[in-house]
Figure 1: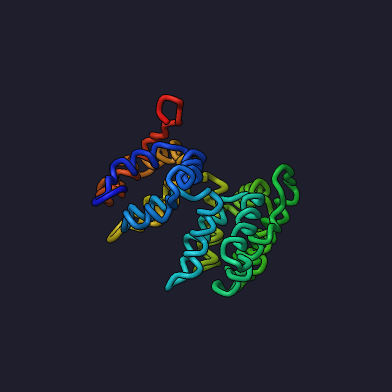
Figure 2: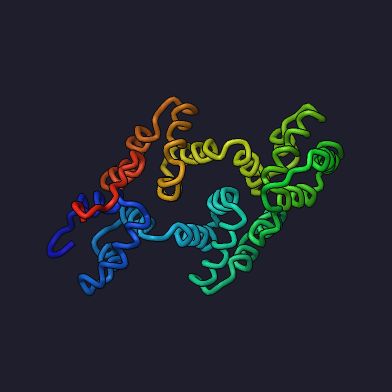
Length: 301
């Protein structure tokens, strides 16, 4: 970055071939060695999608999720898809950490901010998730699952109209393990899947949120693969979703997501990203997809 011009290749290779922990160590060491701020230097030298990707790489996982939620809540249009994706794929403990960090970063409680932006039954379910009302994992009750599946039927397909509050209560309080039993019981007792019931009875953002919960319970890897596919399907590419999922899952389960992507869509994630992106942004994403983390050793420091 010194002098005229910028060597984006070196920046890309260093940052995409290190773990998040190593990148944060570089961020901390940079001002000590050079008396300069690395983030400021990167922002002044980079632009566009590649800059957005690099900024994502230089945040801790929880701070990155907070920044994505903040972007979703403060943009020109509320980005319900981003908020939904983050909330349904995090545990109670992870949600709690996000809530705490959000207030530190943005000087505003996340629940309060979400209440101002969201509405209706979607807002009620989002609030339950953010306040940690979901039962912890570990205990399941088959008899209770039968009762809850009956309650959902009575609130939806078993009556004229829909009692959305019942769906919000069940989906917001029960653990994912218990909900899996509820969905199984619903299919056995009523001969229809919970997805069919939800699509028949709910709509809008609440439908999307409940369907996302169902999909994450059945197969979270498939959920992420489908999110990536939707981001690149049709006209235009949702580059922020590509960044969010590829960066946040690169050290967790991106390898499994790649396999599921190819199984579902008969094309590799890498080939699809290559066709929908360009330049250093494309090359950086490909490095992350290939899993080119290169741990720092005494020889490579």
